[in-house]
Length: 253
Image (cartoon, rainbow, N blue to C red; front, side):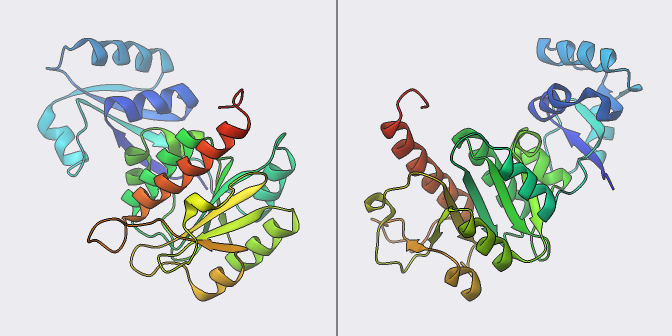
């Protein structure tokens, strides 16, 4: 079942309209704001056909107390969850080598949103999370992802270990991120059908998840801190893979 989400901010709302304006249920606008971007967005929202309510900044602040709404809030029908069978069909339909991101029990929606944004920018074909003990596509994830929650194929699987076995059976080589791994990621050839597997901040990869990875890699740390935030580490790993893929195939980069 689709979830009703409250989204705010010019970029998030514009992205929602770009992907599917028919899912906009209701709109609230700050009547006092007259800047050009909001006025253009106002016209696009009116064309979408959803009811538009004139409001004020305080009312919008109450609707989205922890997020800068920039004068616009919409009620938006989220996508229904996609699971194991949807993932199989999605992978079957890919034309080139799959490039997937697996997040093992990342529960902070801000981290998930940031990971989705990086995944979109790096050209990831699918983001996979376990259904339990992981953040889903909440309103916070949508807002932080700046539209990537709509553009990136996102799947919640019942059993992550079984899913990883299925990916390997397809010939997808799985690289797990682990701080204590002996091999730096910059010494590994990240090419062909591949997946990056990244654990939750603090806990890292679970034992069973590690055992289903083909190789563990580390991001070398040159300073005093021992590790990176999970979303930052995800960005580093994704773009190292993207850099290597582009070097092998400049036309695709």
